[in-house]
Image 1 (cartoon, rainbow, N blue to C red):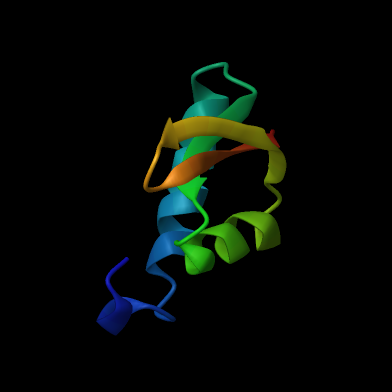
Image 2: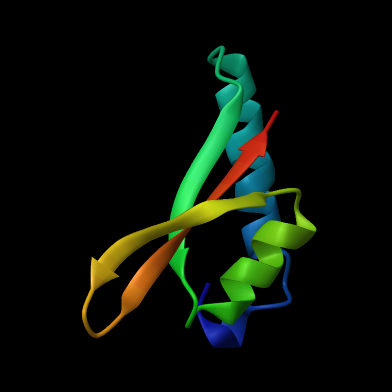
Length: 72
């Protein structure tokens, strides 16, 4: 979410919609990767029930990506 639109509940609404879709389609978890430089995304994920599974190599400049998962 662009900085000027943060704190408006947009990411939360999208996340709720995604979780409903996942459950309705017989799936039981959501996984995604992000980078440490996206602090707001990490905070959002952790506050919304995601757990850090580990890291995966990315590239020499960016280092690693952080793998997160939420079981539904």
